[in-house]
Length: 314
Image: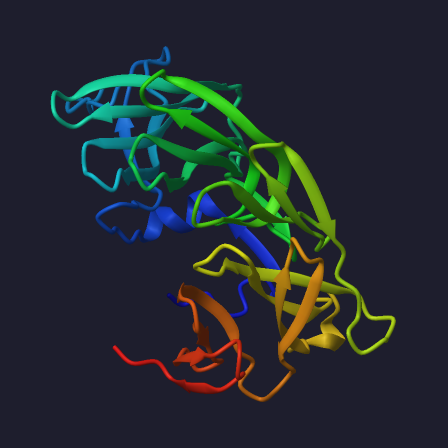
């Protein structure tokens, strides 16, 4: 995974235009791609191209494939499509039973016209599937973002859970988050508030949330923020990157710390201080091995108990 310095650069991202040029697919995720079709003057949300163009002027219809995701057991798939012409558009978020190809609409949003560049609307994406494949968590992203704190995966506008057995949607939180992480038992959610850098840890059973406000470790007046949050395998602590104001060009590259947070104890532990490697957390699947990525995209293991760093083995 190459995500280094994602939140430290000035971001001027036009998701839809970038992904019209290229897209990368994996078995469970499909990036946005677009197909231009010829349609009748009236808007019809069809996915079938019109092969014979009309001699009269007709509006172009574009289909954006925002997101596709498959459950861990392979039985369910979600997809998010937007069909847009110059007059209006429609975004559809669906779930498909792969056994019989039956489909159900989860969300359907009208995109009002007239459509102008950049096309701005929110679209859902699957944040994470439950381990038992009985539900999934989803959030929303904007098709156009601007600024050094652009909300992107694995963040988003709020978080909801869709239950496959009851076809019901449960709202978990409604905040804009720059980064989100579910605990291994899916009972706690850690997220970073957009534009604030504050870490929130939410107990999803009691619906209680505790904020942890980043303060300058070096006692300076510099604003500090957090990103790259990962839960420990035992669910008792979090590791995250803690860095100086990314919106301040004088602070680039920023001083970056790696911190371990114990939410239930309200305690912090500094794992790494700023150094020339500029490590960021990249995962935490083994209790005594936090995966780090350096500024050359090399992977390392960090032992949180001894703070020893060793090359990651395949």
